[in-house]
Image 1: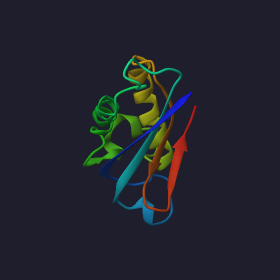
Image 2 (image 1 turned 180 degrees about the horizontal axis):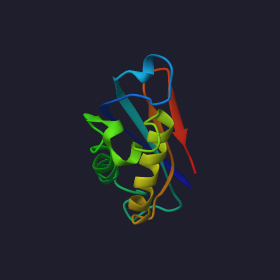
Image 3 (image 1 turned 90 degrees about the vertical axis):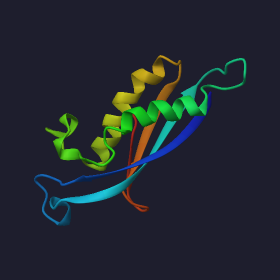
Image 4 (image 1 turned 120 degrees about the vertical axis):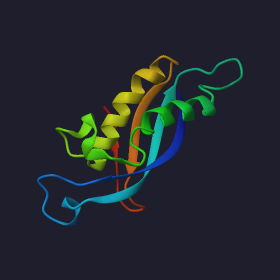
Length: 122
C-alpha cells in the first residue's frame, strides 16, 4: 500500500452557532489542509497519481471555501463550520473524485491554527 500526502490551504471566515465564547463572533482562519491518499498500485511511471493532478483535484474542491463566509455555504447551513465538519465535508467531496483515479482518500486533516486541527476518516 502506498500512502501519499498532499497539503493545501485556504482562508475563510466563520462563526459558531450555539457556542458561548469568542468563536461565536465572526472571525477568520488560514486553514491548512492535509489529504492522505492510499493506492495499492503504481502506474507505469511509478506513481499512484501525479501530484499535480492530485493538487488540482483538491484545489477545485477547496476553492469554494477560499475567502468565503463558511456559514453561508449550503454544507454548513445545518452543521456548524467547525474544523471537524470542514474535514468531513472536504473528505466527502474528494472521495468520489479520487475514486475515479483508483486512489482512495483515507483521511482529511484540517488545521485552523498551528496548534489545533482535526482529522476525518470514515
